Length: 314
Image 1 (cartoon, rainbow, N blue to C red):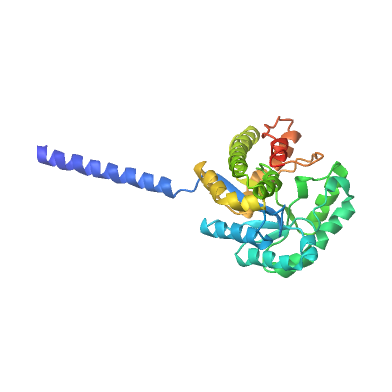
Image 2 (image 1 turned 180 degrees about the vertical axis):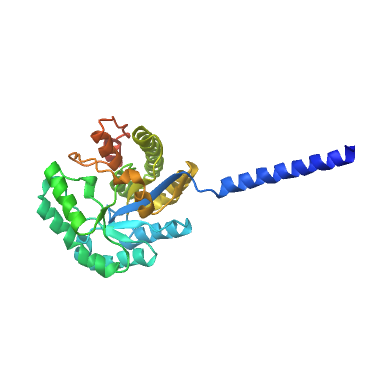
């Protein structure tokens, strides 16, 4: 074969190989991350104390601005109607959430502990929230329920009774499979702002993101123990002032760990969430921890920072 023809063929193969590599790289870049998470927010329209100079609408306005800027998919917010009954202006916070394209769900009227109520009283508390949901979010599917404190009942009988009521009223349970107790930073942040303790606020910043990062590791480890692989995760958040401040960095953290963001509905469509562990735990816990208890698998724990944070800025 002539050398010139040989060279031409080799160049052609090289070009095809380069095209193949480029196509593979492009396909890889375009492919969605195998790690997925749905962000959800509890306690709308208001959660926790506020630092001086901040109003309730400011918190949710900040969260909504971040969600829009970061091009997040629709994010469920779970409401407690008693706050609107106490402070009627807060209905505008819920309306702003919906106007931004984010749906609402039911978090009970007054955020009670199921462990301390009868099933009937608890069901009435859920139902009391429905007129407000119909009013502020009439066109979305607000038949998603999030247990306050993740408490599903301190007896199996109570658990089954409430679950039966939810099913009869067309509710789906909005499970939680990742949690770093973000609410623990709310009170201390407000105290530290009052004291103008910038060093303490920086410490809060660092511990908040560190705890979130630890939760990623711990709850992924638990999923791999249970299923042998990652599942779409559902993160529990709250509409607190410090959450609003740290949300851009929190989203950046999850992205840096390889996560893409999905809706609650998309995450819940994973078959893992169709399993009913039929166990309960006083005080409540996450869905996969219930599954671990049902399967007698030890669940790894996240560092408890409650005492450390409670002692700050006193």
